[in-house]
Amino acid sequence: MESSIQILTEPQITRELFRHFNRRQEVSKCWQREQGLWVLNEVSFVEDWSEEQYQFLVKCLRNTVLTGGLVLGAFIQGKMIGFASVESRHFGSSKQYVQLSCIHVSCESRGQGLGKKLFRFASLGAKKMGAEKLYISAHPAQETQAFYHMLGCVEAGEYDGDLAEPYSCQQEYMLYDCQLEYTLKD
Image (cartoon, rainbow, N blue to C red; front, side, top):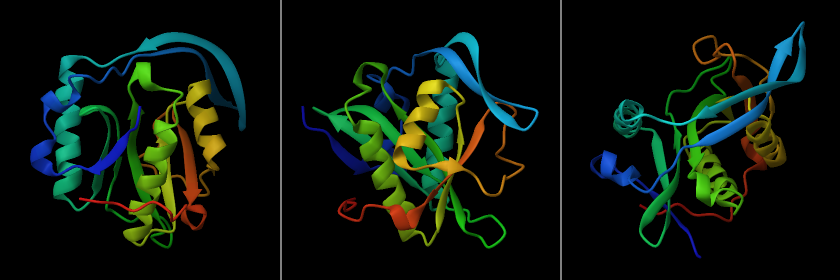
């Protein structure tokens, strides 16, 4: 089925928008930094969002739009099955970064290229914001890291202390690699 990517406005971002979205991720291996080296360790858990986490997500995404950032939704037959967000704040030693704060595809829709499509649109949006690089504080799961590496992301050249969570992997993506064949529509 054909998907479409749309820029979301603040009033569109409601809990109802996520009614068809399933965050579930079964994790069996995670990348962890040990003595300065990245090591793939056996770590088994299921990640899913509670109702409170969805409510918090809605507040965060609305704030992203209100502060000049970008929120994208991926839709199939009118149902949102993926989303991404890019924050407007520039940071880094030469203000080269903006943050890709979220990118998620519903569990049943993964593996169909929707994440890659969302990432490309988010990259274009970040480039239009004047950034040189996307900064990603990424989940350490093996599959998540494989996704980012497949797209051309590498370990961040600078770590942002506010964004670097203890178990996340700090990634960056050079926006000159950004595919410009995509166009964003309101």
